[in-house]
Image 1 (tube, rainbow, N blue to C red):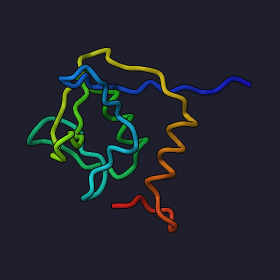
Image 2: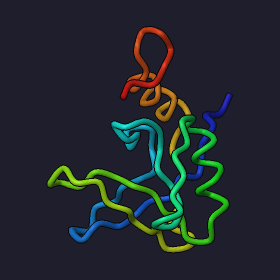
Image 3: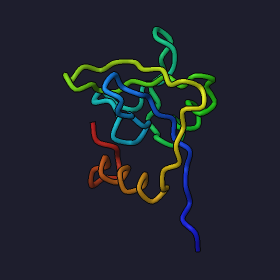
Length: 104
């Protein structure tokens, strides 16, 4: 049985590192903030948010930078890498609390 992989958009930071759109990017005020600045949507479910940003020409999402500030980043079209679905599910489980709700 082969492992399933999911295509995940990523943003290349100024230092050359990559920030993938993964469950750990959930915003403290709830959900994943995606889309154009001023027209952002907050999507509570990771898989739904992933579907929506993958449908964008140039995926846009918020992430917390090294200074702790939330910033909107834009991925170049085609900047995707395959990530193991099991690894994503594991990370998603870590952002869940005991009641099955995502933590704030």
